[in-house]
Amino acid sequence: MSAAPAVPDGAEGAHRLDVWLWHARVLSTRAACARLVAERGIRINGRPTIKPGARLHQGDVLTFAIGQRVRVLRVVAFNRRRGNAAEAAILFEDLSPSA
Image 1 (cartoon, rainbow, N blue to C red):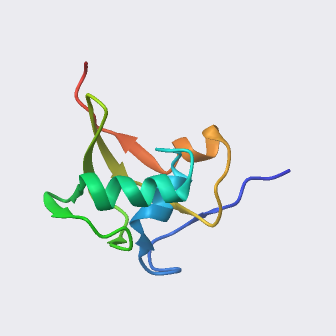
Image 2 (image 1 turned 135 degrees about the vertical axis):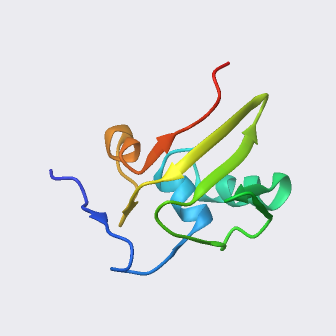
């Protein structure tokens, strides 16, 4: 079974924040990703948002906390569907500070 191809920016425009977080396997469900954004907030390029439907573009940098850990991820690509961990790993560059 082949991996769904990453979608280059502009091919399908911007993507929803909660969907991208789910595709990148940040949390296990899309609803949990939407709750993370709505309840805790995420910064996109330094600007805070609580909108799960906020639009992402390639190159955007996301900053958010999960538990006691701060994650910083640069959006590298988009995917048409949620794949396995290897497929998710190509969607972002982890810029998170070391623990």
